[in-house]
Image: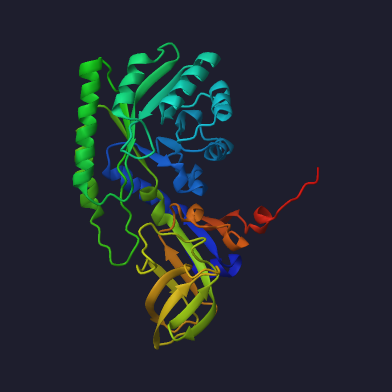
Length: 385
């Protein structure tokens, strides 16, 4: 990728998602893991269609995500409708008009809703019961048992369980304990309730290492994880998003001002925390992976604080980083921003424009979202009655 040419053509700030790198990444994961991948759409909606031939299904957690997938003509049989807030009118329309692969159950109320809508529409609805890890997501083991005891078999098919307890799991011992607990519960349901679980959608929370002081032997980690997963005696699919998408993303932001005071040197960038979010960053003290494009060849080094364009002292991307002396127009290329960063920032704050989004594929760039004025969203349209 020729970043200099891309910057000249599209300007900054901008996101670039390298689809060639994305496909290499998912092929790598598929080569190391013996289980089909489920892409969590919330990680990055701009790359959904590119993954269609490489993942088994898509995890969709809101009606907005569903609308995006539907407009992209993602097949019904690849959609798992998840999320803690399933709006009745939206779900009713899906059940009536579509043949969605599966719906997850996050509460007893959700189960009652899905069961009623299935009966009203005389449609078979397949469910995954999401088992809680103790947070606001999913249902308890006792509630799973209650559903299995009480549900109407005419239109409801309970295929299995879903379980996801968090992200960035670096410790395989934690994953091993989860798998053991899940296997024990699956055995309990079969032995005590004569209910065989057919499948589990499991989110192992694969780690992504964003910062320069990290070291990670991923090959070894995935080999051990694969062996642990083989202890399941049922169909397993792996729900991941961050690990699939992170490495394909780049965020381009340019130096627009330079200043110094009693507390140090400051580079003001045309992006900031409204656009760039790294999971695990702590008060901007960690240094992410990045490249710097500069036309100034200078051997002198300075220590800088890299700050964004928001009017808040919190808008610092990196503190106290030693760099060759910067000049206005230098561009930072922050790496590993393919997951969440594009949607996770406080993008409406200060009514600054949303960056362009560019897909790079087969040596070509495709502008898939132009600069968007958030002032349109923050404007009070007063309607007199």
